Length: 307
Ligand code: PSU
Ligand code: MN
View 1: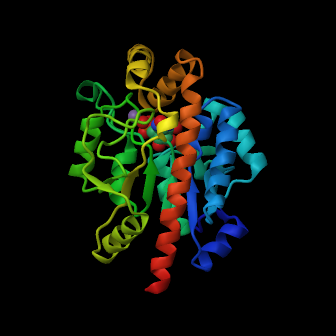
View 2: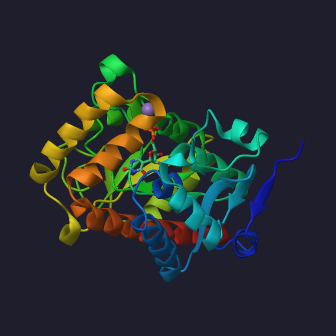
């Protein structure tokens, strides 16, 4: 059985010509932000990738077909579907294809599809991780395991404080996933640049990050790497403002939801509780990540050309 895979022509050309391509996920669109901010952010992220000279490739599953480069009209439908869209990760990707359904891809599923298409760099907002209270709930995102299996470099703004950041970094270390923060000593906490948790490694050079990616392939080390890009200073929201809202959202989630619904529920409640205040920061950091990912992809394309 052949895989139902549609790669947009511009993306296919770029990949065949060794030009830089950046994958973008779609669960952030359906489950990460409300409409219409979600579609606006998705559009600006794609434009930000183009501004830096790379080709954007938004990934989803449309009527059972793996789609690399979702067209504007389809992306708009996914944005409007919101949380009624299927949220796809490693566990349910194949069943969505088998039943010819439509779904949006999380970080884990986007990495899998990007790798199949030959895309090595991916930009998102925040990754999934170890949830607060995981010692009781065992809720650890499949994103972490995926980073240890699939060779894609993922650029994010750290992890939201809905997660337990020290535990998330511990698990990444156990899994052998390199974590590099771009230009700052702390692993960032999404809305805030600082988390008081030191990053396992720090870099100021996209070229060095690209070189590390290639070396890991040469060493035969499986898995990807995580690049954390702190939110731009002018857009950050102090932890003191966000923390009480996060506490409330997490405690409501504990009483009301389990499983894959936890992250979307908490993200939605934080948006409501902050009355959209967090939205501007969210959009700014996604754009900043898209730009950094495009620069890493360009360096990677360059290094590959030089051999
Ligand atoms: N964190 C965010 N925004 C998001 C997500 C996480 O700040 O949109 C989404 C991503 O798609 C991520 C997924 O891969 O949630 C993780 O879900 P879970 O914790 O159920 O693995
Ligand atoms: Mn979970």
